[in-house]
Image (cartoon, rainbow over all chains, first blue to last red; front, side, top):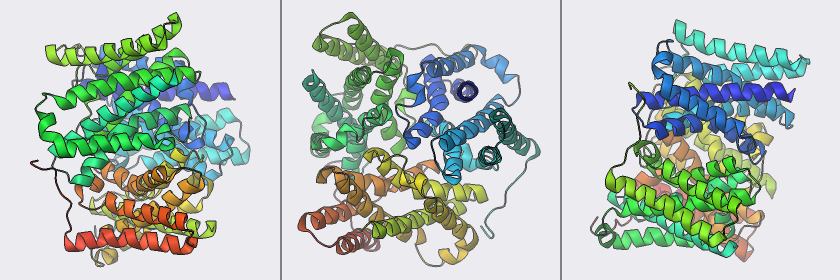
Length: 203
Length: 203
Length: 203
C-alpha cells in the first residue's frame, strides 16, 4: 500500500517541519531562517533514509509535494506560532508524532528494499532521529536523542512493531497504525510521567 | 558547456576553501587544522549535491583537481592571511562568491540530471549552503544560514535565475553569469546595507 | 584478502564504539544514550565511506555483525566503564586505534573501487575522521580533528602507507598492519610527547 505510506510520509514531514519552524521562531530567526529550519528538519530524516538505502535521488527531490508540505509547516509556524504555542508542548508533541511516523515508514521501506530486520530497525531509528539531530545541531543544542530519557527507545519500539507485523503478515494499515501509536505513545507518556532509564553504575 | 561549469566549480571550491582556511587561522588552528577546515568547507557542498543526485562517487573524488584547489586555498590562507585580512570582510565576500557559484552549478547539474525545477532549486541551495554549514558546525558556531538575514535567499535567487534561463533557452554562459552575479550581489548588498527580513509577528 | 579487512573493520567499529560509549557515560547519559552514541560513532565513518564510494546500502546495513559489535562496545562501556577508566586515556587510545584502522581500510576499499590514490587517501581520512566528528558534534565539543595537533595527519600517514603498499605490490596483510601501526603510533606518540604542528605566521 504505497499510497498509505506516502501520505504518512507527508504527515511526518509536516510534524517535523513544525518542530523546526517553532524552534526557529522561538530563537527570533527571520522568515527565511524559519523556512530553512522547517525544511531541513522536515526532509533530513527521509533524505538520510533514501541515501542509506541507495534509493537516489531521495523521494524529497522526486516529488515536489515534500518541499511544499515542509514550507507550509514553516509558514504556519511563522504566522500562527502564538496559537500553536497555546496548545501546550507543541514542539514535543509534533516531534513525538514525527518520530513515530518516520521510524515506521523508514523501517518499512528498508524491509521492502530487502534489508534484514536488524538493519531495517536501525534505518527506521536513523530516519526518525535524523531530522531532529540536524535541527538541534543547527541551533547549537545537544540533540534530544542524547538529552532525553526515552527517545531513541520510542523509535526502536515503533520499528520493532513494523518488523513484527511484517513477520506475522498483518495488514499494512494495521501494522503502520500500531507502530506509530506505540512509538508516539511511549514518547509522550515518558515525558508526561517522567519515566527514566538507568544510568551507568557509579557514573 | 561542461567546461564552463567545471571551471566555475573550481572557483566555488577555492572561494569556500578560503572561508574555511581564514576561519581556521583566526581560531589559531595548526597547519593541518587549517587545511582540513579548508578542504571540508570547499568540498562538502559539491559532495552533498552529488550524493543527493546519486552521481557517485562525487566529482570531488573523481578529479584530483578539486582536492588540489581546496588545499591551495587552505595553504594560501595559512601563508597570506595577513594580506587577505587587509582586503576587508574577506570571509564574507568569499562566502558570498561561493554561495552564488555553488547555487548556480548545483541547480544546473540537478536540471541536467532530470530533476524538476523545484527540486533543482532545493539542490542548488543545499549545494551552496552545505559547505558553510559544515564549516560553522565544526567550529561550534550557529551556521550563518540561520544567523544572517539574507543568505539562503541569495542562493534561492541564483537558483531561480538558472531555472529561468533554462526555461527561456538562454545561452548557458549568460545564464550562469547572471545567476552568479545575482546571488553574489544580493548577499553582499544585503550585508553592506543591512537589509533585513521580517520576524514572526509577536515573536 | 577481504576476510582480513572485514575483521579489521569490526576492530575499528569496536574501538570507535568504545570512545562514544565512554564519552556518553562521562556525560551522564542514560543506557540508551550510551548505546546510541556508541553505535553512531562506530558506524558513521564506514557509512560515510560507502556513501561516498557509492557502495549502497553501506556494509553496516548489509551485515548485522557491525551493529552487534557497536552495541557490544556500548554495553561494555555502560557496565565496565570504571575498569576501562583505570586503563589510562582509554578514549584517546581507542580513538587512535580506530583512526588507524579506518584510514587503512577506507583507503584500501577506495583503491579497490577504482579511485585514484589521491582520492583514496581523502576517503581514508574521511572514514577515519567521520565517526569522531559526529560523536564530538553530538555532545557539542569542537571535533578533535580540529582541536588536536596531530590527528588528521595520522590518518593521512596510514592512508599513504596503504597507497605505497598497493603501488609496490606488498602483501595485503603487511600493508594493512604497517599502515595501522604507523597511524596509531603517530597519533599516540604525538599525544604522549606533545608534538606540535606550526601555526600560521603572525596568527
